[in-house]
Image (tube, rainbow, N blue to C red; front, side):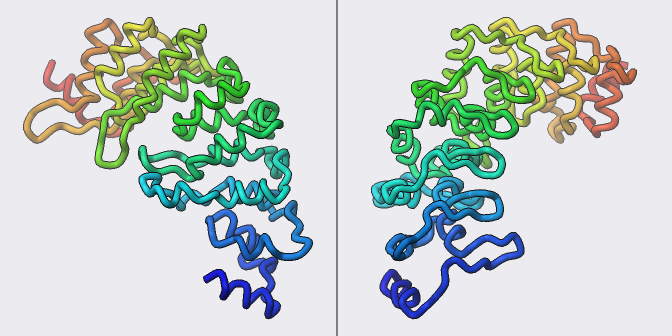
Length: 327
């Protein structure tokens, strides 16, 4: 393929042409989708800092691997190859470049959600490679135009494998994101039971404990008044052991957010169903457990809605069935 590309370039093919309505160039797309780029790096006087309409240089595009592209890191031969981003940096690309949203290379490396243990959007060695750069510490601490650091991106997008390396290179574990969420809020969403669609990260629990030991309270509210337990209860796939772990670590079960909603309100949004075999689903068992712990399902929020009103609006038949049986 490389000889063919060289032949096309030698014949006058223009890789800088735009190819879609957004105005992206062919070359930017090749870097973002991990195409064959070696022949293009040999173009005389190639402007490595050329930008697409989003303000991304070739290096940022290479770090910002398209969301539908995933590498399988079980393939050793693929991991052994230098990435497009590493090749660009070796050619002199500016590591400090930011796009129109103020995001640098580390923001982009960590922007895609990691869905499986063996799949990541970025090359396995990219983070380590870029963290070895003299400017790495300042870039790790840099906020984008929304006020988010690379650590915030890693937490939100479940790139937990990167957390320790970011902390070792100057990331602030105590700084909340623009919505007031601390690290515990982000991790609380990631306590899930194994399923056919996702594998829970083995790093979630250890990191949660690590941030607790750093002095972050498990009852820290975000700007909406939600403590981390709201994120746990609002997530899909959490189970009783996760709730009881939060409780054991001091989570306040009676907390209410700025709109007067409690965690029963959050749990009632789940569309719990009635099991055909007569057994209650996990959400229903947890709802019943919280009532046994003293939470009132008739407690109203600021809009005068109880958790039962929320369950009715959300179609949470399993939760509503609790009260039918008790009549």
